[in-house]
Image 1: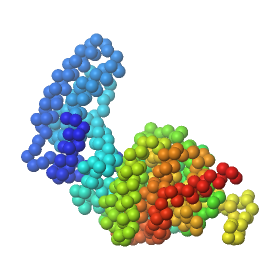
Image 2 (image 1 turned 180 degrees about the horizontal axis):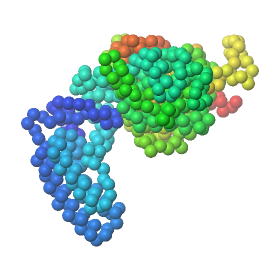
Image 3 (image 1 turned 120 degrees about the horizontal axis):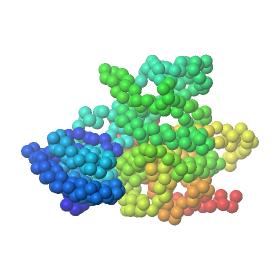
Image 4 (image 1 turned 180 degrees about the vertical axis):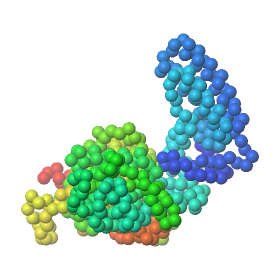
Length: 538
C-alpha cells in the first residue's frame, strides 16, 4: 500500500474509530482502537508465517559466514520490512498474544545474527512519531485538524481525548513547608526564607538559605524549579536542556547552573502530595543570578545591540553542543515552535475582538503561503527558544561612565547579567530565535519600530542572515506576536489564577501587532534594515 493510501486509511480510521488513550510519543500521538468486531489476528498470523519463511535465507547466509553488516542489511530488507509494513495502522490493535508471536520472530533473527535488534514496539513508536510529526507539519493534511493544545500550553492532544485525560496535566502547588522539606531532604540545605516567583505552567521559588551550612560551600540564594506533571514525564529532554545551560556557562555565558542533590543528580523526580493525591514532579535547584528583568524597561540601543549579539553568540556556541539524548530537542510538534503557526486557527475563538482575529487569520494565511514552503532553506541549529524580556537580566556596567540619552536623561550603560529559562530550548532555526527576541523586546520599548534594527545589527555582527531569512523576518515576528497573544488569551480561560503572568504580552502586544501589520512589510523592513546598516558606519 502506497504512502497516499496509508494517509487515507489513517484519516478514515481517525474519523471512524474511537480514541481510547493518548500516547505521549514525543509528544503527541493517539492510539486508535479496534472497531467493534474487527480483529487483526489473521493479519498478524500471516506476517509471522511469511517472516519465518524468510528467516531460512538468513540462516543460510549465516552458514556461509557472511559479514554481520550484510546480515543486518538482509534482515532489514527481507524480514523486518515484512513485520513493519504499515505498522502504524495495525500493530497498536494487535492482541498481546499476537505481539508476542511477532516478537518471537525478531528474537529468532537475533539468535541467528548474534546481535540485538530493536523490538517491534519500539519500531512502532518511532514510526508513529514520524507519521504524526509529518501530519503536524502539513497544514493541508486531512488529519491535521485532529490535534488541539493541552492546557499546559505546550503539547497537543487529539480532539477525542476525554476531559479526564486532559486533567492529567497539573500545575504544581507546593506549600512553603513542602519547599523547605524538599530542599532540606534533597540538597541538605536549611532554608531561611521562601519567595514565590512567576511562571507560565510550573512553580518557581527564590530560596534563601542560612549562611552556615554543613557539608560544603554554598551560596545564600537559589531558585527551586518544580515542573508541571506533563513536562515532568520527559526526563531526557529536561536533562538535555539543563546540560545546555551548563555548557553555555562553561563557555562564559551568564546562565544559571544546577545544584546537585546529595547523591549527585542534577534533577530529581519527586512524588509530592497534591491535595488528596500524589503526583510526580521534576525538581531542580539552580543558582540565583543577580540583575533586573527587562520586563517593564524600555531598553536603549546599546543593550538591544548587545542582546542581539549575545543571542547569535549563543546560537553559534551551541553548534558544538553534544549529548547522547540530543534528539529529544527535536520538538517538531511543540505549539510554541514557529513552524506550527498554522495551528493557531484552532484557538482563535478565544480572541473576541473581530479586527484582531482577522489580522491573525491573515498572518496565518501568509505563513502557510510564504514561510512554510521555505522553512528548509533556513539555517538550522539549537536555539534558546524564548530569549525574551522576562528571561534576560541586566545590571549597570560599573566600569562605564554615565551618559545622556536623546531626551537628555542621565542613564548608565547596561550589561547582560543573566540568561534564564531554557524550557523552550529545541532544534530550530537562527531566524526563529531572532524573531522571537525582537517580538518580546518590542513590548516595553518607547521606540518599538526601531527595536528590530538594533537587535538585527547585533545578531548579524556574529551570524549574517541569508536573503531568504531576512525576507522572512518581518512575518516571523508577526507570527510570534500571534502565538503569544492567542495562546495567552486562550490559556487565561483555563488558568484564571495565573492571569497576571499570562497577561504579560497582551497588555501592549495587540497594539504593537496592529501597528506593525498596518505599516506593512516594506515600511517596517526599511526601518529595521536602515537601522542595522547604520552600525556598519560607526
